[in-house]
Picture (cartoon, helix red, strand yellow):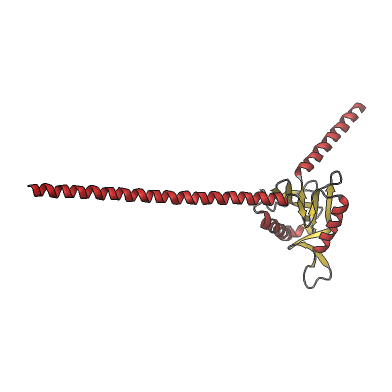
Length: 236
């Protein structure tokens, strides 16, 4: 009888020891799993923070840049000189059979006469790059190509656009207003790719500007127009 009790005690002790070991093993695995998750979360958070710092760094370094080595805030005299240099540096032949040079940003073709700046207190705040004229018969084909060419150039640096409308139907564009196909906001700078109409011709144009100054000028013009209208009201 004593032997039977002795055997039962050994079996029970073995069972409880095994259960404890199993519980301990499960507990250790859970801890290791949590540690791995914590480590991955910490790494991911670090990557996100680094990504945001990189974005901030790009914004700080790029928001003053207009195009090439032209920057916002430059005087009219200085920026016009650099605009001429930029236009000259963009010259190349369309193909081997061309007898003269055209002007390109990548494969996007623009007019040398369509590049100009706008100034506030002799300070550059707006630059337009006017694309080549495309006849309405080639709206879907050539216009879409030009739109894609310049979008790809800007996308390669700034990523997805803030505004993404793409190529519109022709009836959505008129001579009084342009259609914004894509837009990027980089700090205090906006880059818009627009489609403009001039009679039978369309163009893919590039607007690079500081919206704060543009809005200020717009509000100032509205106030002047309102003041003028009110003064003329006394005529009646």
